[in-house]
Length: 398
Image (cartoon, one colour):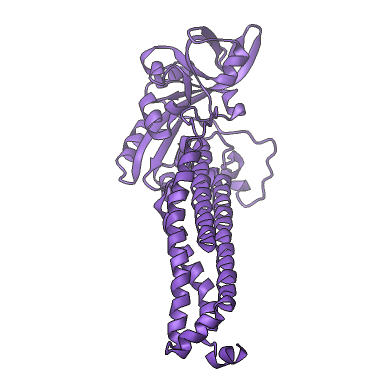
């Protein structure tokens, strides 16, 4: 019973620990990774690779040193954006694609101007693909689509501007034009620096700010069926659509690394618990042999073979593993369920109200199989020792 209780405890902790860590990993990754695209298409203003001097015949064979290079006259607009967007949406690997118009602005707070960014988005696409609605703490994403010239501010930005829902703020564009926008809601991502500068408006409102037409798009955010495809798809889109691309694994490699390390540590700790319980079973069975020397000698003297004695001790070990493992699965589920009921609030994900727990069957399968294997190996060596006992030596000693 003591050995079975050890197996139960280690199995319970393995399931609870792995389930909690996996749920926590999903939450932490979701804070950043679920809200960013798998592939991002954009057209960054950059220095032109072609210099006029290189086009002069007499200087083509020379080394030309040019100082104070300036960016070319390219725009942030994705050329033929609507056509590219339609082509991406027809790709079978794509779950969805959302256009975006982003522009830097100045939020006017009296005589003070606060630098920020207005992201013009399609409310339905952003909510469906990137869970924008989960971070809205007041108002609704759909409000920017139904109310003209409206905006949703980051909570930290709204606090700096001292505005409430329903207020009208003045926004100044880089062209020094001022637009009034009505505040219809607030969002909180948990990333303070992000919430201090970012805001969301409809595509039409953002286009009005930059004075562009209905075909103007600065970014296209793509969600794929499998995130592992993102590097290859990004390279393909860059070649086909002649635009710059960035995949999620390149942009946020540190989050994937952190998630893998946390999972590795969790598995290491859980398996260590199971191994320790195996050593406990080994010690118990080993001591049992010394206590049952007389019984083993009588069994062998009355006709039991060494193989029979071996099977008896292996049966004891496996019964400990199976009974303790089954009970550990049940208690592990109950502990995980109890953790799942503990209140937990985070401003980064307002929809999360309790500690995150993953109930993946793989943890239960690994815990049960490992408990059987550990107890079998723990009982194998004492069983082999018991099978080699000579009954004559034991009886003569008595």
